Image (cartoon, rainbow, N blue to C red; front, top):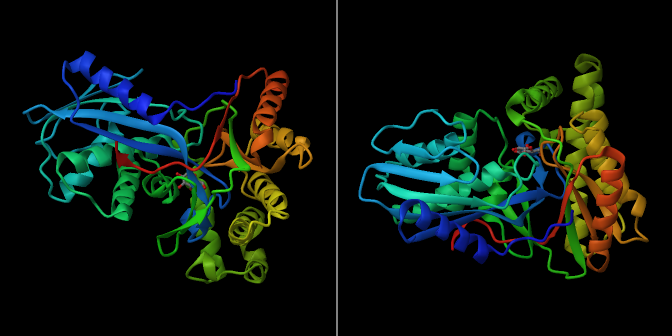
Length: 390
Ligand code: GLA
């Protein structure tokens, strides 16, 4: 169904109510951080590439209050409550979901902050397992809460890197920097162009009200720690080594062809994806900067095809959802569509005209349901604010 986004103020008051009903206390801190959707630049954040995500109007919100102890007591909907002794150096533990929190606490411990005990309630409107970075949103919201509790503000990039380290070391997902950067740096009406070689974000305006973004969750789930993601990372590392270059940013298609024989078919196709996706992303950024979108459909379609055929991270449901948007086409208000995020399920992103957005989303929903018997989740979003204390 077409879902509207719950206002951040409403989520914050839900989190406060949950804190009150579980622990009987009023919050002194409320932290929020958004999920993200990537417009283009997929599977190249760990290849020194460019990526162009935006923070979405879907948030993880944490309401908390210090409790005069050395223990953090944390609850969230649908998961076992967690108690963490903050006097201990954090290690991976149980329940599984607590590892995002433990990883962030460990990051603050490594920076020699002494955390006070606290009670917290977490609420989320970021769909889980949908390729929309619910885990990065949780990490960034929790890190922002801890900033509040120790009365500090980390440089935004440091906070994002701390969150990425939590994902690597505590959740076992060897992700790039895109998700945590998008959640930390997000800004209303701005896309975030990240140069993943330098780690520098640059804001690209997305303020034209006549354009909107549809996120379509296929509701086919994936697990990035199951090996597919790590295998792609390794393929790109091997591909780069065979070009003899230090960074993918210095690699041209000519270099890839020169190494084609040594690479073999699979590594060659992975490498072709990286080089062409970097070029497509640079072109797409130009389109957003100049407002000339005549090429954006071809760029997004090219990205999807490359992820499907060369990088092999798409699946039937993603291909179908993208095809349904493409069928509606430019006349129906669709500018471009592609899979987004890590893949193996998850979501697609469709750039469209705002006046047609609801109609497009309804049609995609209906057709997808009819063809797969799976209820998808679609929503319309604009670029939202990044992690902050509410
Ligand atoms: C996941 C990772 C990101 C990025 C994308 C693919 O979301 O967490 O770092 O690699 O996949 O673009």
